[in-house]
Length: 268
Image 1 (tube, helix red, strand yellow):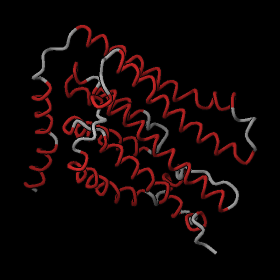
Image 2 (cartoon, helix red, strand yellow):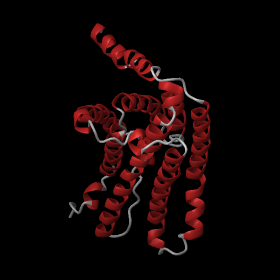
Image 3 (cartoon, helix red, strand yellow):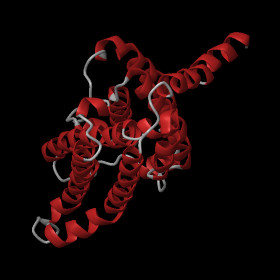
Image 4 (cartoon, helix red, strand yellow):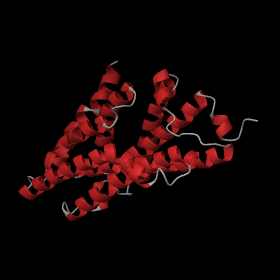
């Protein structure tokens, strides 16, 4: 019990104190820095509103009546995915470059140290995976997942499945860039490690509508990934873990429902 409490203290309190020491050593933020952060938060609000409402509106206006009926549901899902990717990356990256004068590597996209930190990424994924496997058997989980929607014909389904999972994975790269990159590294100059708290709140809220345990888990996951990002100056941990968990959830849901074998062409 003592060793567990000691580990928890090192992983939380001591990490936080270290972050406060690292980020309080810089000169105080200037008025320009604070104004830039205010603009960043306004942009973030606009992007989150756009992601919530515009994919459906734009899909109906531009694509729904153009696609064959058997492709409309799949097309809607892919449209949502790539709309989200664009919203999370394009305008935020441009704002950070032009207004905040931040390079992509300043926002956590720095490949240096990736292999050195890889055990952290793998360890966290293996820590989360048993929880995902356990939850995958619940009715709430199976009512929401898999997010992939089947088409007609085994070959067609497999092609669509691979295209969906690739797009879905890239969506998490964009999500990590927005939350752990832009909202975290873009704010740390002004807020110090408290930028983690400011980032976790909207991150938790985008999980509304999903199972309650997932929304609660987003608080702890977002805080942990934010802490790791600031300590390693990299957002690749979140990308690796998010993609691994997302793909596992869809595969587990298909397996639980007895659809995975047919999708992969393994059932006769």
